[in-house]
Length: 173
Image (cartoon, rainbow, N blue to C red; front, top):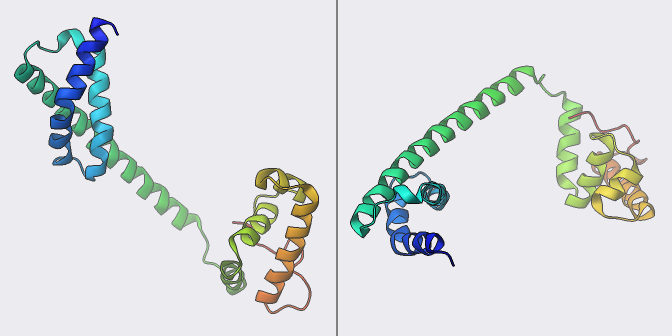
């Protein structure tokens, strides 16, 4: 281990827990404190020559970096949340109200098993063939075709139909 690596290792080992405790009290959610500490330590590694030599001085330097890093983290989180909210509003505004048949279909899909829902939606909503769905699901093409057939039959029963749901029976989205 080089002297530089040894110094960084000592900083992270000796002062890291204290900086993490500082961050855990200031970052929301506290589970993000470890990520902010990692970012703080990246700065410390890059600027290791700027870290003061004494333990107290190094701690103060690291806490100052952690404070700025936590502030950046909060700003980034607020930006992401604002973008998610704006996207949600755009999607809601652009989404027409569902028709009753689509609601019935979604409820029927919800009553199916996860595997049935997955193969049906891969084929109907994503536009994949049974062969392509097989590749996505890690199945043999014959197994995917059989699973799709059975899933269509179960969906048809959930919808109260005599015959299996036709291939294009699932609405887009």
